[in-house]
Amino acid sequence: MKGRDLALAGLLGAACLVGLFFLLAGSGSLPDRATGSRLTVAALEMDLGPEGEAIFARAVEEEFGTWAQPRLPSNLSLALGVADDEELARGRRTWRVKCLQCHGPTGAADGPTARMLIPSPRSFHEGVLKFTTTRAGIPPLREDLARVIRQGVPFTSMASFGGLPDSAVEELVSLSAYILVRGPVERRAAEALTGNPFGPEQAQGRVKEAAAHVAESWTQAREEVVNPLPPFPEKTAKSVARGRELFLSKRVDCAGCHGRNGAGNGPRVWDPESGSYLLRDLWGKEVRPRDLRAGQFHGGGRPQDLFRRVDQGIKGTPMNGFHEVLSPEEVWDLVHFIQALAQP
Ligand code: HEC
Ligand code: HEC
Figure 1 (cartoon, rainbow, N blue to C red):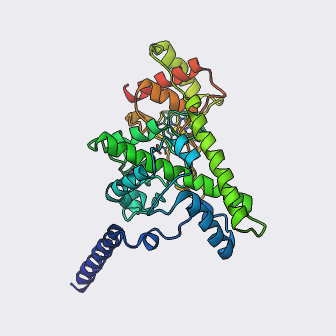
Figure 2 (cartoon, protein in one colour):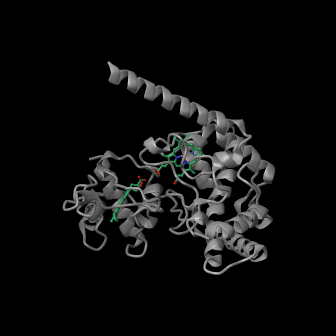
Figure 3 (tube, rainbow, N blue to C red):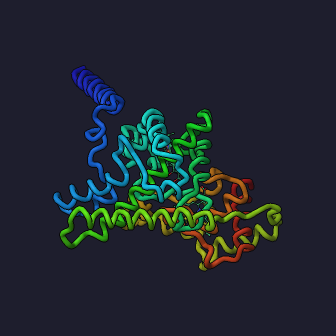
């Protein structure tokens, strides 16, 4: 009886804490306390020391505003297709209501529900999205962000926000893009500054340089899209058979991770000696290869989606693309084999 009372009290306490969090987060009067440091995780990892951090944070704020009042330098605004800082402010208002509980107040994936979810909500601070139409290593397009927001990531807790008006989606795209560039800019600038003492002017110079570099990469992304157009090669029995051979081959070794039958339990996944899973993603989380028999594709199940996944991989995960080892015809053979696995 006592134990149950205790458990109940604990539950009530936890509920109050969560309520308090929302109260604080929603009040808008405590932006800095609610968001922790003004720097992104990426910059904090660079360890600039307390004094350096303060100088650096001011330089970043000069260009990017605060999390409560985000703004962008004009070159980045242009590259990301952000109309103006007002758009960011509107995006942030929607973010706090719809996205904060999972992605956190600054997009670091530290919202109150984040811990309970597998896969974890994306942290935007590394600047990487998993499912894009662009090549490996290239930033996403606005369209990629809009697609994720409208359709969600199927078979994960990232739900669809298709009910929002187009204007709200565009505002969220702009705010998401803002967060996605801010981490890489801070990391690049902080990297350039570590090791030697620096003053405000140097810090600002490095932040501007990094912003210009990241702006350039977003502008270039439009030319780095993988967009196979229909008509797509037909799924014949021969193509499926060639796909199976490739899947099992040592050359690409899909089976090493996905297992010979596609169940996601290949020898590279699990270490029987230590009794642990071996694959981790960019965010440090354990990640398991998809069970391809289930046909539950998180990046979309259309032929062009599957082509992109095999050709360019899933960003930030050990599922690399095979563009460099496979011809487009071979990628299609694998797509056909995957489709056959999912619909035997
Ligand atoms: C219930 C929790 C939850 C909420 C609320 C939520 N997300 Fe997500 N989101 C996730 C999870 C989980 C993932 C990771 C999916 C994965 O790794 O496959 C994700 C991933 C994403 C991605 C990255 C997709 C990729 O390709 O890497 C974007 C962008 C995103 N969410 C935007 C948003 C926006 C904008 C909102 C608010 C309108 C929102 N999310 C609300 C859980 C959530
Ligand atoms: C190093 C391990 C590894 C190898 C090798 C590998 N994969 Fe994967 N694969 C993964 C992981 C991990 C995921 C899940 C990533 C995620 O969403 O977090 C995945 C996901 C997938 C998906 C799901 C895509 C989606 O939209 O959900 C497909 C399809 C796929 N792999 C096909 C292949 C094919 C075909 C090959 C060989 C050419 C291959 N994989 C090789 C680890 C691997």
